[in-house]
Length: 279
Length: 279
Image 1 (tube, rainbow over the protein chains, first blue to last red):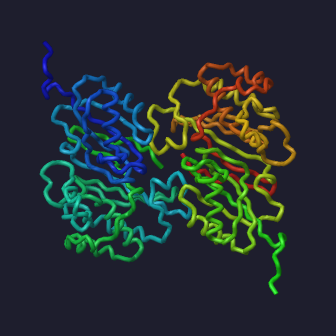
Image 2 (image 1 turned 180 degrees about the horizontal axis):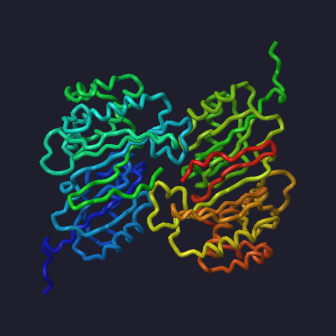
Image 3 (image 1 turned 30 degrees about the vertical axis):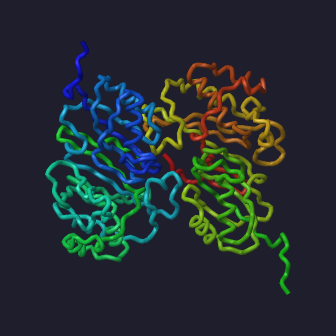
């Protein structure tokens, strides 16, 4: 007699993913739209015959890229680790790559177990943006006071209520609670790193931010605000007042999606950043 | 009374262009298809009101990229050099960039005046091709005898009849005569450089070829043949016999378009290669 499989028999998987978000309608599965989560679900189904919806460490918007997104899901079938990554990469479109597929303990969850995330935002400062970078940078060839932007970036480090930098779309308000880790209430998040890193040789200006969680559009709204500081439209000394106001209209505009990369997600079990492969 | 403009009043322009060919149906204008030539014609018309068809140094196929394609055309309106390049870059899609726009003597023609062209073909050898390279490389993760490929590449240097490496599509047979310079008859061309350049750090293997003209699909057919040598399916000593046979079926398959870049076009007036901006 065949033993009915219990949940305890399920194998929990962790995938580390790189993707080019340009041609996807974001991470989250949607009807009649190509999404990263949907492509992944379809590939898993084609390989295993199992219908599972992989959970991401968080959603990325349309046009946002990932160097090291993490997804988790449970499969009934036992599959060797190397086989699953190879089979997925043969099945997925070239714009999504599985960097690693590993078995995890049954309590692992890509979002709930995450402890910190790192994002980077890339601004191209040259006069002519090469066509092969256009999907991966925000091309902005105007004078910028980078020192003032750097001072502004430091002012958002630490624990703050980031309501002024959260998307105000009411139909997606549940996303305002999208965060790594448990017990993060409201719009309070803690940023551990927030800095601009100029790379003059490549005409790139990169903003790197690491924190315990991010509100919807938070990185793009921070970048849009810092760029207003760089252009001289906003004093960096205004940043604390903008944070305190908890008013979205006080901060700057949302920077374009194409410059944003989810670089990596950290877990208590340790998760080293992926090797940098871009630019 | 307005003086009727004579052809002698026309200003001949030379553009150096970079483009990502992925989303274009090649260089040459076609009805109801996005092409590089068509986008350029439309942009020139929007800026100047003049309907001119820019002539390329040669056509590139769908999916083939350019680091330094050259186009020429004549305009009646006098326009400052810096203005035309900037106006075109504001009007063209981000996948096409004008690297320079300069006035030339009235006898300049992007194709007829060309003396040599350089192409590069990029093969990605790693196990996982990063999504942001997928449009710009041929990902081929199989063992290759690169030394044999290099010996094969040297064997096509010099003047040869390259019929064995020319596309056999009869409806486009006029393209078999597409070549730089005047007086190049039939399928005889002279290759000045033909070499493979491994770049182990980036898992890239690059084929660079420089010659006085190229037949349709010639670079991709050479690469496809060298890859057959690398895989051990063809002896490099067969290359001279393949050339002499003038039989397309003797050579290897056509390598995918996405790995191919037109690097630059040389003219007697001197045209230094564009700065390398990719990979």
